[in-house]
Length: 559
Image (spheres, rainbow, N blue to C red):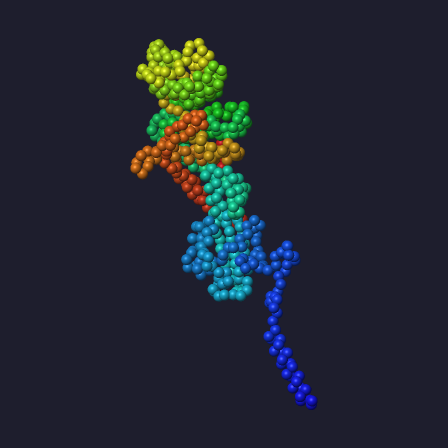
């Protein structure tokens, strides 16, 4: 074989070997990709690779607030904002509402709408979180364009939303700690408790006091214009349950129109003890009314012994009356206690009737003749023994018709029994002989008690407030009560009056039918908010050495 034949044979074998390699396949496993990084069969470690569903930026944005991370704020297109929304519109909407839809894309530079390949979306940063105010900045990495968005405008150096939030917390009667904790649980940026206290001291409390002084001055001028003597009802309230109160408030109400006329807050260290704050509050209220030229014709209070003596010594020309409800409450407590004793169980069936008789006795004697009122009250002693005549010269017999049927078969008490002896002691007690002639036959302090229930919404007894804070919350309760005290009864679409059945605690399972009033209004809160904004805008700006310094207004001074 010569050289040419050898070379031909080598070329033929090479072509045959190359053809066989192309047609060869592996029958077992195709390994066409890189094996994932895993350590064992039982414990699979997640490979270090990006997820398909959520692509995050490798370069973390610069954040200045440690608690709020806003990585999902979408950057608006500048041309769209200029065409549809003005800066004034964004300032009005202080709630940080996003004006964009889900089609916003961060892959476009906001300066010229051109698509970029580098880091336009990586240079967006949450530059400032100031309470409820958020400021977002974005810088284009290609052209250097800078875009800025603010969630709300400023009033002086205070964000509008921060001040508005402080107004909402106080004017709604919320304790600030609870209200701000709601935002913390929701992970929503908000103001701190110190910020709220600062707003309250410099802006909110002065506005509340000014509004109360204006309302009270207007009420006094109306009473003077009518040339009438006023009938007032007063009652005290402690800031905490028990006999160790720090503050005691005394409220005076004009019983002719049902509006709160005056409020005084007394601290326990101003008097001998917390038991003397009620008398001191009444003395201050009466002095205030007399200093403004108002003549008090009738004063209705509870059975406070100190107040009785003070009125007798200092208000000789004023008729002092006692509220019937306070007397009835004391009698019911005594009767209920006696009915639990042995051989006195039958008294329990007479408790409601005895209480109703006390109310009827006062209402049926409009001239408030003391002798007639006492004979009507003392007639109860014979009535419960089924004796209805011979009560006295001014009230000789019972006024009810003849008893028949079930009323006749009632369990009457027998003379000389333990039950009858106990009831006689209560009827003829020294306390009742003092209270019955002084019972009010026209005015009651039920509206004052209703005002105290409103105070519980603004200043609950389980929360502690400062003197100024308690005073302002009492005023807010008075403004709310005065605005809604004359509400009409609600009606259905057909014009029928609405009622509801309630089960008060003091009735021990009994029910009461009450009228349903129309919805409450809060116009006073709107007026207060407008006054706060105006007061904040009018704060003067001093220019000292070329720099502006904001002057905080003078806090309110309580007397």
